[in-house]
Structure formats: structure tokens, C-alpha cells
Image 1 (spheres, one colour):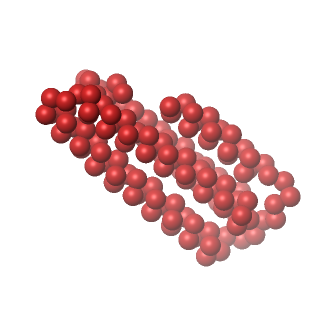
Image 2: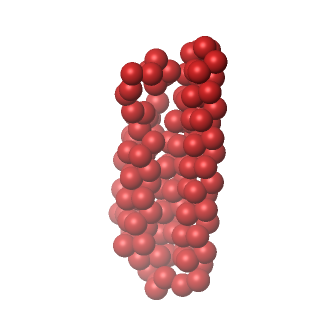
Length: 130
């Protein structure tokens, strides 16, 4: 699944970066507002993913590895979707708000960093394989 998110990132970023005919303006309050909304959404999803991971750990401690694996998978999917949404905010910043390329590139790199951050980690815990 993370491959699909990575591929869509690789398709969205060039579209926003190489869009021609888009007038460029200086970053203004709208760009700052967009950055704050993106940061708020990333923080909210991080909190939700943390709670889901804790719930998965408690289900594993209760002896229910299948439910723990499903919960951890849900947390990873939400994390990937969060990373993808940050990339889409970058596309909006460039195409709709006419922000300079460095602003949208910041969104793209932030989305890529979140994609790496939410990448499933292997561990000795059997629910991590999901």
C-alpha cells in the first residue's frame, strides 16, 4: 500500500512543480494559512495514529494479535493518507494560490518525510507484519 502512496507522490509533485503558465506571486497570508492547516492536519493524524498504535499494543497484550495487526494497519494507512494530503496541499499552494516553487516544494518534501516517518517498522512483535 505504501508503494501506491509513494507512486502518487511521484506523480503529483512533478505536476505541481512543472506546471507552466501559472503566475507566481509572493507568499502571503493565504500561504501561511494553508501551511498552518497542513501542519494542524499532520499533527492531528499523528495523535490519532499514536492512539491507534497504543490501542494495537493493548490488544496484543490481551492476546488478540489479529485485532492488533488490523489496528496497526489502520494507523499506517492514516499516516500515509496524511502524507499524501500534505503533498496535495503543496499542489493547491502552487496551482491555486500561485505560490513560488519553493513553497510548494516545502510541502512536497514534508509529505515525503511523513511518508518515510509512517513507513511500517519491523519489530519482534507479530502485529508489525501487517
